[in-house]
Image (tube, rainbow, N blue to C red):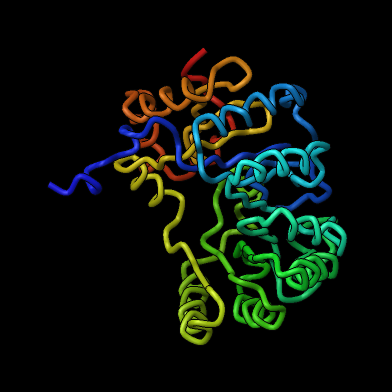
Length: 318
């Protein structure tokens, strides 16, 4: 028997990855924001709670953390959090709109040796990017990429396809390569949060997606060995079908310390302000076989529009 292949997430004493939305503040008002970011959560974790959480990450030897928001660089303890995790050699990624990254911040990212800095760039042109990312500044975002790359920071671009920008994917990948970006990541838009509210004006047609993926495949071949071009071919419903059978060994933490079971479902499996990280992990493992979760997930698969209720939280453990 292959022991390695027989190990599942339930056999692990701790998650392998923490995806942490550290805040909900944001300087933009993106039409496709899954988190409906823009204002702070009134019960957002305070500094003592944050560092209690960080110490548990270290104690459990969790190897990899990704920080997002909101806009994570607006969090007052952002670099304190990063310094703390990196001093214990935790692999660290940040997902940002990039608009606050100048040469000085790029030097800090370089010193901290991030696994990667992922910049959201949703258009090969200023007009397209800013039509989707309200109050956004395409020039600042591109300048952030340049500053990071000049400091030899592993820089990635993430692109969310919508009716507004899907036609620019080829140009965007060419732009990324000209900048010296390490990789471009994309996939189908998720019907969650603000994206759900704007679904009729955002969601590309099947025909547009067909062209999109055809262009991506050509670009993957064109830049093979020179720049990573990656797309996740499945939509959120296909992902949910897979995760019902094979849950990931990861936790999704939102700014108030509550832990979501998975992005497309509304279930909360713990609260880091009240529960230990190890308890939340045990809750997470049990929750995937909870009849309420299984039944709701199957209903979402049958009626995909229900994924729009993913931010209407349902607490499984109190």
